[in-house]
Amino acid sequence: NSGRELLKFLKKKKIFVSPWIENILYKKKFNKKNFSPVQLFLINLKKDLGVKKAIYLRDVYKILKKKKLKLLQPEIALYAATKIKIKKKGTWHRFATPLNSMIDSDGIPHLPKIGYALNCYFVETYWSYPKAVFHPHNSFIVCQ
Image (cartoon, rainbow, N blue to C red; front, side, top):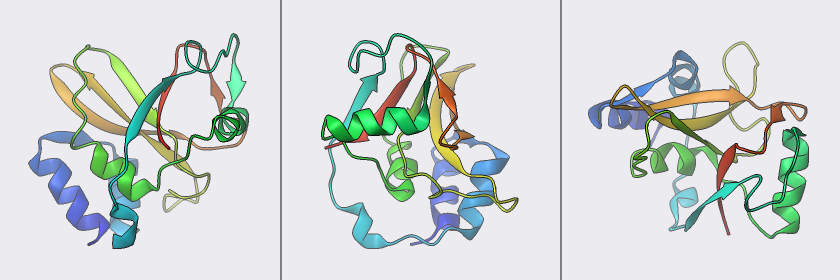
């Protein structure tokens, strides 16, 4: 029902969250209708989208739109973080969420990323500026 409840759920699942995720979840109000079933896809920039050099986030999102892949609402992304189990250590996947949909108390936009390291799961953030840079080895979680 709320960001605070989701934060408690993440912690109950023994998922470590960054201070930015906590900050955003404390103030985030969720819309329950966004929680309809969705099928998630892991997209690698090089392998799946043909990206061969560093690329801006806005350009990643343009390619996703052309491929008819959709961005996730933050509520869905953060809840999905409790369901996705990454097996390879040191792996990070970013959720493709709309620009400015996750803004912290300092006014900085973020997008969530999940990772596995030190035998633990993490939910962290990455800057969500149109000119944030990503590389061909990066991957995003999207839906159709």
